Amino acid sequence: MRLVAEGLHFSYPGGDRSVLANLSFEVQSGTSAAIIGPSGSGKTTLLSVLGGLLPPQRGLFRCTDDDGLDHAPADVATWVLQTVSLLPERSVRDNVCLGAYLDGTPRDLARERAADALAVVGLADRASEPAGVLSGGEGQRVAIARALASRRPLIFADEPTGQLDASTTAAVLDAFFALASRTIVLITHDETAAARCDIVWHLVDGTLVRSEAGQKVRR
Image 1 (cartoon, one colour):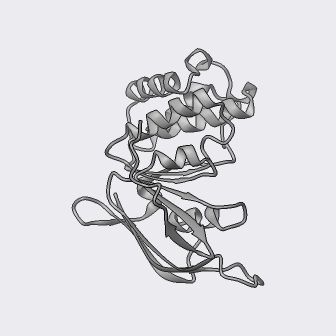
Image 2 (spheres, rainbow, N blue to C red):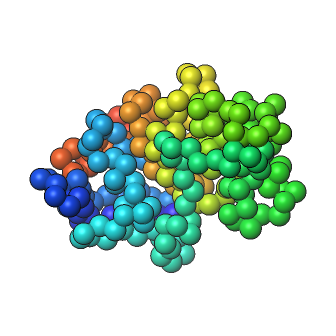
C-alpha cells in the first residue's frame, strides 16, 4: 500500500499553533517508516489523521494499492495503539483471532494465525487464559499479536514496544519487519526501533524532517 500526504494541516480549536503545518511525505508500498519526536510534538495526531480518525483542515492523504486504486485507511489498515483494547472476558487466543477475522479468515485458519503470532510475542502458553488477567505489558503483546494475525497491507503502530523488555522488543520488531509485503508507519521514542525502518522522520514544528538514520539494515 503506497501512502502519499500532500500539504496536511491540522490544529485543535483554541490552539496557538498548527500541530501539522503543510506536512507532505510519500511511503512506497512495502516500506517501513518511523516518525519520532518529543511528547507533544503531534505524532499521535498525525497517525490519527493518516488513519482517518481525524480529518485534516487542509491537504490530502491517499492509500493506493499496487493497481493504482485508492482505499480508505479504515478498510486496509490494522492498528497497534498505546491504549490496549482487549475483550477481558474472552481468551487471549480469541482476542488475537479478531485480527484475522477482519479479513474474513475462516475460524480454523484464524486460530492457526493466532497461535503463530502468540508464539512470536512469547505468549503461546497463555492462549486459553482470559485477557483480563494479563499485565499491561502482556496486553500490549496481545495487541501486537492481533496485528500480526491480520493480513491487511497497512500497519499503523503507536509506540508498540513502549511497555516491552529488550528481548521481547527485538522479537516483535523481527516479526514486524518480516512482513515484507506490508507498509508500516511506526510512531516511537525508541531510536533503536526507528533505526530498523527504511525511512526515519523527525516531526518538527508540524512537518517531517528526513533523518540520515534511515535506510539501515533491519537485522
